[in-house]
Image 1 (cartoon, rainbow, N blue to C red):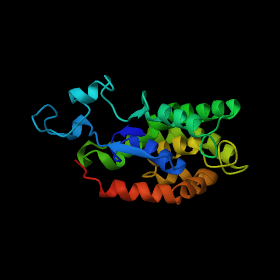
Image 2 (cartoon, rainbow, N blue to C red):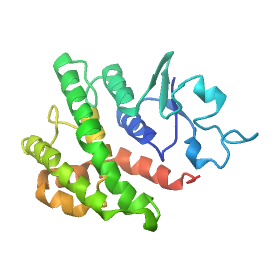
Image 3 (cartoon, helix red, strand yellow):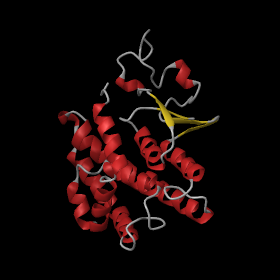
Length: 219
């Protein structure tokens, strides 16, 4: 049995999405980011990323963590690359060339997209209004224009970054680009990205996990 430690309101959502798409049985153990808990060390505090029992799994103190029959992994994107080899096609693959392309686009999502898309999310949604900085949003949008143009060109052929089908590469890219949705103006110059992201978010597995995410306590 696969055990995933985390909550839907975290980067564990990427792994939950992959697991649902793959149809793999799994158990989700809720672990809350410590910054959401008033006193993470208090007696009776919910299991969180500073709880001693969780730190035994991941001394870095971050979620998600996957335990797949003794294979223990952290880092959401690395977990999905593991699952892609474990499960095989269609969401994953056992082809070495495709695995390399999955890794390429996953790293592209992590390095070229997420730092800037996360800044958009923070300064247009998550931070209190008096702490938001539109100059940082503008800088993030400017930084994302080239990566989105690269992805737009890659999607122009068969509509997916790898293999002409929905894979873990789509999940990595879609989940990091989701943070940029509060800047819809960014997507006007990337019509293939805009259509592809809408298609990703129309998938039944995505609708299922986002409904669960909305129902999850926002502690």
